[in-house]
Each structure stands twice: as C-alpha cells, then as structure tokens.
Image (cartoon, rainbow over all chains, first blue to last red; front, side, top):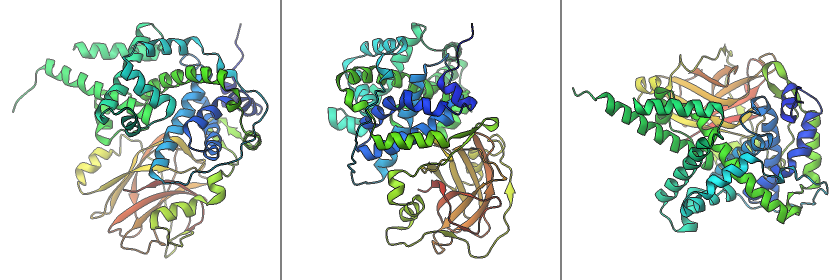
Length: 197
Length: 282
C-alpha cells in the first residue's frame, strides 16, 4: 500500500493547492514560534511570511525518514527567526505594536508531541540542571549567549560550554537509543572509526 | 623538522572534529557563522558541517515543539494568527508557482511591514552611507559593456588559496536581505585585493536564476569614489547551491567599503533601481 504524499511533498511536486494547505496546517505553529522569538507582533507577522516562503522553497529537501513534517517546519522557522534575531541585534529598531485581531480558526495540529519529540525531551531531562537552564533560555526563549550570561550570572564561556555540551549530550543519548537517522548513525560510526585510528 | 605520530594525528583530528561540532551547535542555537578557518578544517576532515548543523537544529526543534505543545494547551489564544496575516498568507499561497525542473520558485512576494514603511533599497543605502545620504538608486558613470560569466565550482576557485596569494585582501561575509532570491541561510564572503584588482565571490544561499529573465549583478563601493557611483563588478548567474567566481571590476577600486549583489534584467544594468539581494561589508 502506497502512502499519500505529505503536504510538503506535494508543495515540492508543484501541487497548486498544497501551499494553502500548508498554511492551514502549520500557520499556528509558525505564528507561535514567531511570537515567542520576535519582539513585536508586527515583526512576527513579517517573519511568518518569510518562513512560509522559505518553507515552500525548502520543501524538496524534506525527508520523512529523517524528521516529521512538523519538526521540519519548526527547523526552518527557527533558523529564519534566529537569523532575523541576529540581524535585529545589529540594527537598532523602535519596537512596534500592531493590532492583532485573532483568526478564530483553530490551528493547533502541533499540540501532540510525537515520539521523537518525547525522546528528545527525555534526553534533555538527563542533562545537568545548568545545561538545561542554558538550553531552555536558548531554545525556548531565543536568548543570545550574552543574554543568557546576564540572566544567569554565568560567565560567557560557561554559557557556551553548557549549550554545546548539553546539545551534544542529547544527540549522544538519542543515538544510543537509535533515534537518529541512518545518515546520522553512518556519520557517527565513521567518526568512531577515525577516533580509533 | 619534527614529525607527529599517527596517534597524535588521530587525537588532533578528533579534537578538531569536536571543536567543529561545538561550532555547529553555536550555529544551530545562536546563528553564529563558521569562520573561513573552520570551514577549511572541516573540508580537510571531510566533516559535513551542514548536516551536523541540521542535526542539532532538528534536536532543538523537537525540544521546542515539546514546550510549545505544553504552552498551547495552556494559552490557546496565542496560537491564533491575526486576520490580516492570515489573508496575506493566503495571497502568497495563491501566487506561489513552483517550477519543478530547477526547484526554483517564483511568486509575488508581498511587501512586509518593514518594506511598507521603507523600501529595502533606500534602507540599504542608508545603512551604507548614513542617514544624511539621499541615494535612491545605484548608478554607474559611463555605460559599460556587461559580460556574463559562468559560475565555477568551489573547488576551482578556492578562497583559502586566494587569501594565500593575496594576503592583504579584504573578505567580508554576505548578509541576505528580505529579497525573495535569498535563502534563509546565506553563507560565503566577498574577497577583494585592491592592489591587484583581483577578487572572488563565494556565495551560498542565492536562488538559481533564469538568465533569460534576470541576472545577478555585483557592485563594488569604493571609498575613494562618490558613493552614488559604485563600480560595476559584472553580472553573473547562479546555477548551484554554492558558487565561486572571480570578480572583474570595470574600474580600479582603491579602497573597497562594501559589496552589493542586485537582481537585474538580463545583461545587467547601468543604473540599477532594482532589489539588493546581498550585502557584504566590514
């Protein structure tokens, strides 16, 4: 039995109705990410538009064997938001406040965490508390190294170390649980071989 | 001359790989760009930094989604997008038309809030020349013949080799604008040696162009010239995710201060009033 192509696969294939479906399915998720990582609703609106353009352009790269569609959308969105944040940091800007009359349609398809997300969270829970704190601020609040250092009182170098070691540790735990893709595992085994040489 | 043992070499490679992994975390979490030296190290180790960055981005996304799911169940209203944005997105979806052969997407890009207030072109000019400048278009003094150059692979035009042979060259990273030709992640640098007039463009993250419809054009801003008249660096095409091509300035450039890539009609423009896609400056 052949599975039906996903929305992103249909976007990549040029299905004219797929971009609209993509918006209906993922705009709630993208909007939530943007609202959390943008300083104003107006900027979040701009970001959401950019993200969907990126998403449609990136649709041919989606591989269901590596990540779910939701994870892929969140990856693209986060990357764009982080890059916007860096540009914003270099460009002083007056905060904007825009009217945001909510669209009453519910778009909460992402509320069910999938198995991979739960495993990632379990791996996160195994980190040291200070690593969790730093990653929480970086991932969920979009804080820079400097902002985390200010917020926690940790030296900048310590913040970098916790972020790096924490995420690398999560990857290691996921690899041990067999969560990472075949591509990841192939690379990991290549690295192990090289480490032994 | 001392020689290291295979054990030392192995340890060095392992440590270098660990450092590169850490830098990939920095990119995935904070948007830090890898330096030229780090990219060179990665190439030497056959270390795929893009794949590593994506792996960490994926983990971060999954963690974020767990948190969002909890948040969404608490404050559902926040996930409802504004009516106005919803309408704009629908317009975008309607005008989106993929051309599957080259995976090149064309669509009418809506003007963003920022663009509605200030055109990007004026904004870029203000960034470059200060708030007092009145530059609205890029201009070249005499009309020069434009030449189309085919992009070359990164292997044949190596920035490391270029910097070795031009130690005084400037090299600045590209920053993408909101233009639709620019991908989310822009990489690469503009290299230029004023003494020899030699330069090199390395660009990753610019959409492939259809040369019959439009071409990219490089402009070099020279501190010794009137800022309204940047030097034409030639037109070029992009047909790969990453391109490297030599710069051939039409006029001597004594002190480069910024590079810009615009999207132009085929053959390029003498006076550009179109969009800036990329900027590189100190």
